[in-house]
Image (cartoon, rainbow, N blue to C red; front, top):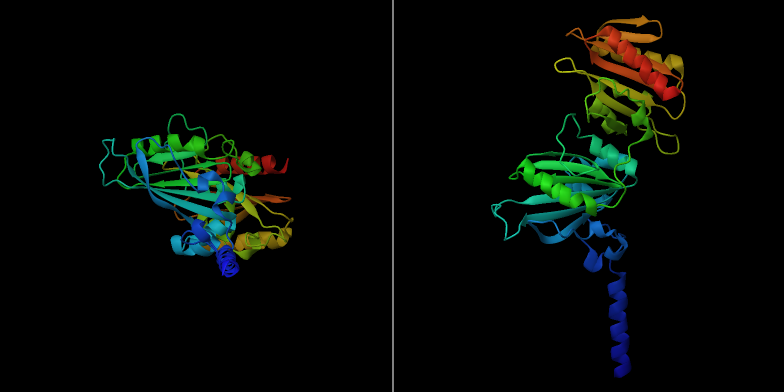
Length: 330
């Protein structure tokens, strides 16, 4: 009888070990996801945020489950390089004077690299976002939400009932707990001229969805944003320039393989003719204007191309285009 009980007990233990997820599984986990002890600590618990208490368990989402959490928005995250998402919910601690109805949702995205984390973070930037004292990593804070990027992690803070101060204080307490040595931006961000740039408006564009969201002039398979890793996908870097209402955009495109000059020019020419008027070639630059009289320019050099989109000053647009190509190709 003793031996039989031992065999049954061993069978139960083996069956439990074979079951996916176990006690560490959360909504959205895939069957083969690693146990909690293999995850970074920040993806398992966030403790010590003054004035706030965590509600319930962390929810972990891997690639299979992210579609259910971000309805319609998961694919762009995958194109940057996604590993997992941890979602925490907080309520005001009993000792604070914050209304009990307030709830804060913390999303921590663990990406494949620090550059990927910056990329998905940058998709939300418009420029001139407010910061918070003491936070060294790239971040922004506003009433009801905030974000930061540090190491391989991109963080969203969502709290519709909270003030900017409450979001800022939460972010300042959280930032030291996120692994990494600050924010790592892709090298290509250095190719964007600083003169006239709208502070904080820069973006790292990776994948066809981010490209399409950035501008209709980046649509089309000829750019190569949808190429696989084996072929080497195109990437781009953008920023806004000028002062409202005369704000324009500069995009620097980096190809993995030099495109055929004639074919690239023909594709961009077709786009310009579709969206612009007075399309012409001025030397090595393709130029056109929209209905508002704003200038759109295109040029390329080796592995790089550049677009100026919507600049009111033709001369300034050309200067910025030429400088961008020079910085990228040097």
